[in-house]
Length: 298
Image (cartoon, rainbow, N blue to C red; front, side):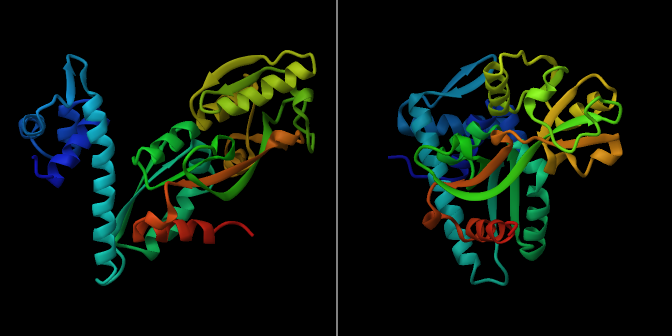
């Protein structure tokens, strides 16, 4: 029976996540030939192919997917063990993986992580941007210790902890006909073209449904992948857009934008923190979770 080798497990996880032995070797700072040999040794020891190899890269076989799932759990358990032992050393030590949606990263997460890491100098935090649906899947599959996503996707086997709120607003330039309004409904914006956001499938759905109920058409002039791109297009007068006001407010003066709160019922958004099991978190991940919750407004 194959004896579990933490290094081989770590490399196997890297190969599956990167989809390439070459990229995995760069990520883990080890020669590609050494990674390839480790993968061959795993397959020889277990007697079953773990990876499908092609010109486009590698993907796990069904057996490889099973190994990947257990390997992630084992590595998380080892990190938890290391963290618990590290609690006896000077200061807390550990490594926490976080997946978060773009809104949380733009609105508040960097500041919270900065204050956490300044107070816990031996804990490393890696943050990966994902869509909310992918955050839930990533935490469920063991790719992250904590996830931050929209409440609208909070279903399934995870624990979802109420976290923060944000509020959608219409963003226009200073020359827009609605620029002097103090508030607005989506219906009042439908005479003008919008800029859509590829990362906000839920928001797009709310907007389309509201327009349909009003018997109106929602017209998109363009779709963009980032907040910064939206700011620049609005600044140029191409169209208007809808974004969380918490994300836009700090940049509005820089781009000459007006931020007008939306009064529609769906304009108030909610964030949750998702974990597999709070009791099973490593000490470092638990410290971060407690820190995030302690920094919640109010």
